[in-house]
Length: 90
Length: 263
Image (cartoon, rainbow over all chains, first blue to last red):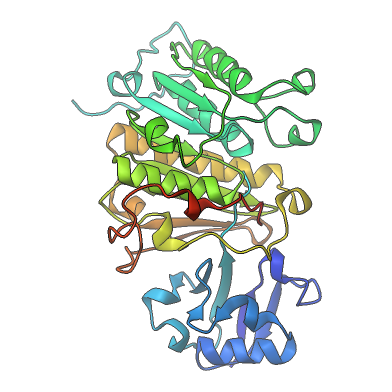
């Protein structure tokens, strides 16, 4: 199951500068584990012991996973997942 | 009366100010890139009163995106310059703009007082602490807020109406920690602040004219400039949101601990 994941600028140091990567997983949780196996350290930037870090939003297509099934949100082949951290420039 | 959108393009012809906009009072928090993009649209649309709050001075590195300023402005304080430019732009469009320049920073000690008595706060600050402070002070004071942020090619904007729909803390619960790269290193491109600022102006005009709808109230606009996408993401109110649930009852300085210049 190939999922396209958009990587925000602050995390690209972990993805060899790539702004978009492909990962596998039937759920967001599995997807993040798969990302971690290829890009060590990324999981810690996205999650803490309680789940997704509070200033990070993860979207499955157009929906915030907090309003779906959070880390257990099911993914389908061809989905796109976006990681959107709080950003403050102005 | 049905709110009229100002659609005239030149002063002197039939540029009658919209009765509702001319009576509206807006506080601009931050006269940088977002403010440069958003505030002129409000001024030229006939918003009657805009106070500009910013404690910064113009630097050469600002000029690629902060279109209110020019080279000759370097070293001068932004707030009075921004107000002067906005007045001129309003005049060019056939309107009169009232306003005060406040060369100061929005802080926990003054936020509640500063945001009171406005119809809307338009926030384009460059740090998380001010963004959350605006969200909290506006919610507690019953003032609608239009907020936004941009770094490099990405950005977001949202409108919040106190007691109705989600707030900034529903979307981003709290300030990020210190592991983020800083703004100066990350930079912001002109198009990102231009798009987000214009979106903020649209959200602000709709709120001021009573034209906002439910979709605006529950929406986070997310721009990914390099991918050419601008998405409207549905953001319901979050039941455990500290602000909406009433956990935050007053402005506690500890919540806005040293501004993190984060990206």
